[in-house]
Amino acid sequence: MAQPSVLTPQSDDFPRWYQDVVQKAEMADNGPVRGTMVIRPYGYAIWERIQRELDDRIKAAGAQNAYFPLFIPESYLHREAEHVEGFSPELAVVTHAGGDELAEPIVVRPTSETVIVEFMAKWIQSHRDLPLLLNQWANVVRWELRPRLFLRSSEFLWQEGHTAHASAEDASRYATLIHLEVYNDFLEQVLAVPTIVGIKPKSERFAGAVNTMTCEGMMRDGKALQLATSHELGQNFARAFNIVFQGDDGVSQHCHTTSWGASTRLVGGLIMSHGDDRGLRIPPRLAPWQVVVIAVRDDDEVTHGAREVARELLEAGVRSHLDSGRGSFGRRVTDWEIKGVPLRVEVGPRDLASGHITLVRRDSGEKITVERGEFVGRAREILDEMHDAFYADALAFRESRTTSVTSVDDALVAAQHGFARLDWDLVDEAAEARLKAEAVTVRCLVRRDGTLPQHEEEPNLVAYVAKSY
Image (cartoon, rainbow, N blue to C red; front, side, top):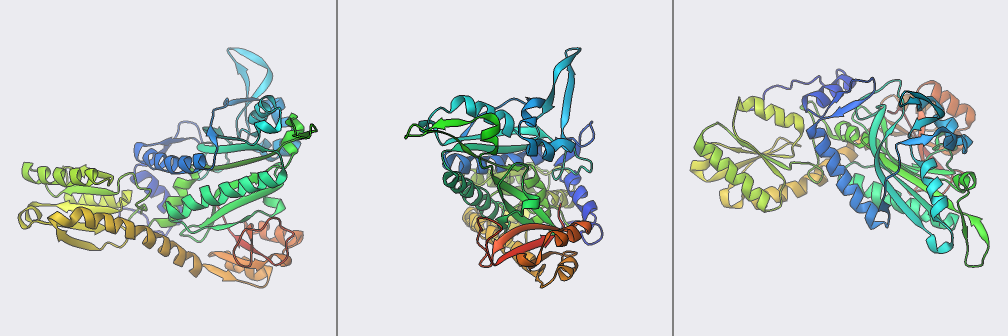
């Protein structure tokens, strides 16, 4: 029997609940330098699953992985003025190394556009070199004033894709492909988070971009979280870094570039999209361990029986973990509930004697007893069912907290507890300023049918307005 939750209830203090989960699920700790993060093995295992799923999709989209330096000459950032202006407050700058003052300060990368396009200019000569599709898994540094583990840390892990194309149309097509078939597919098919897929208004675009696409999710406190972004950069970086190719007509022209990224913020999104007062709830396609097999007590017969159950699951391709029975059973159940493993199998003397297995779902708490010989097949069926249940639950919550409004005043009220849907025609510069004064922003713009627009000047667009992380 599970013990009462040891977490702060979400309804009492959502930020405290979040910190409790990160700590008690053994996901991360604060690093020794303010704003840095130590990712513990369980948190990193979740990140590894995210990496694997995204990396497979990125490679299927044609991009190849590469690696570029952590340190960037400060002059590189100044070559694209809008870019450096967008990042100036967040930069960490190295002025001394090896005991000497550097001739030119070095920036610790906040993102790698400038260093990657420098090498694109070197590698691209003709239209035969295009498109050039690169991806990097790396750490980046953005000096955060108000850090929060996984959500906003001064150093975080991510992937950043950078591509060069012969035309604006090809660059736009590829950025959209990444956004829909990599990011949105992962978010809905693995993370089980329903997303609003739209474009950012000009005021919220990435520094240096001509168009920014975003996937916005709703967290359990009604706030928005930007989960992934894709940017069309036009020829801004190509002009600044002279990325030129010779077309098949012999005429030289600048490339069109894109960039796109997702980070360890996805772990924070997982926690806040699905978690409850008992802790994490991890969708089975993402979970490092899909099933935990718990020996009810620490004796040879029960431990052996539990080990056999775990072995059968592993042989059937189910990611499982054996808890061999040390310590209080109730305490161990509570710990695994906090960690959010999708399915729990409890093995005790009576289960072994009766030839039955008890399965417990983390999402609903439902207990299911099955014949010993049928439990592997039933476990797999339940795991498949659970993904749809996670998604439906998150979608129902989002819909319950989304309000269609007809004025900026009403949008400000609705944004206190969820998303407001407002005609974009009603939001001018003064209205955006009013929203921002109340810590509310236009998260994205979509067409009325929910599809992705090409630009914010399209008629009949809808703005999603919310508070955010």
